[in-house]
Length: 192
Image (cartoon, rainbow, N blue to C red; front, side, top):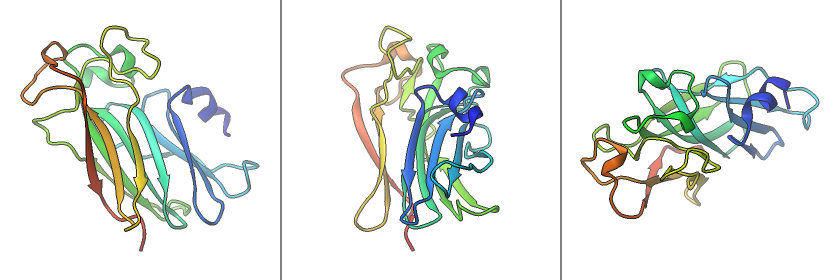
C-alpha cells in the first residue's frame, strides 16, 4: 500500500474488493479524515487518496468499507464536528465531545471523478457517544470500542451498525446509562 497510507492507518483501516478485483483500502489519515486509495493491479500501483470525510467533520473513528458492484463502495464511521477535535486522535476526545454515525456511498470510485454521498445518519439531538473512542482501550474508563460494521444486504442496500452508547437526552459521557445498544441504519443502494 502507499507509504503515506501505511504510516497513518495504524489500527484504523479496512479493505474491500469489487467483483473486477479492484482493492479499496480505507483508513483514517494523520488528520483523522477518512481516506480511500485503490489498486487495480494487486498493489503494484495505487491511486491518490480520496477524502470521504463530510464537510464540517473534524475527526473520524473506526472507518469500515464494503464493496458493491464495480466502482461502488459504501463506508461508515463515527465522526465529530467538535472544533476542538480538528486533526485530533479520537482516543484523546474530552468527555463532552459527541460522536455521530456517518455513512457514505461512492459511485465511480474507480474513476478520476467519483461521486461521494456521505452524510450523518444519526439525529443531531441523539449522538451515539460522548468522550473518548479507542479500538485498543487506550483511553481507559468506559470508551466506545470498534463494535460497528457495514454490509450489503441481498436487496443491494447498504446497512451500517453502530453502538449507541448513551441514553437519549444525554449531553456528556458521565450521563451514560446501561449497556450500549446496537443501532442499525439502512442507507443507500450501492447496486444498480
